Length: 215
Image (cartoon, rainbow, N blue to C red):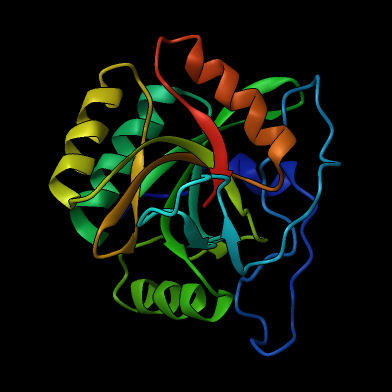
């Protein structure tokens, strides 16, 4: 089991949500501030069914949000975070890295899973803590309903192939399965479209296709 970065608690304003879950490490605010050039003022979106803007109906045309993740740890160094995400993926399943900024400095959040409801995320977190597979101070953050979509595929195998391809560029992508015919390759988890858009442009600068989309 890895240990969460100790500086994390000193660098956040966190309020525990009590309703329905007691003191269950469910946080009202997750560390995911934007670049210094952005403010988190974009339109907040509640989980629900949405369209991603395709004019033609496809298996990926109408999507449920997966806005909740389990925050595992924070690292100042990208390679350390990527190694941590790889270790967690091997032991607990899909884990990924989201780049963020704290005091104008890039940090890397290591997160696990994509959940439609906070209840599902908390249940999974408690299971993993019970098995001592994640840090005791891991928590479920506030809804992060947007990410950067890199690709969509009709099979999991094709989606994972795309994940391996983009990881060669240093992008820690992950897969969200929408239904039996839709597997979306995503990066990051952000509170609104403005913040996600900053990282979309950063990914495009690497020569990769990317667009802001619900997650």
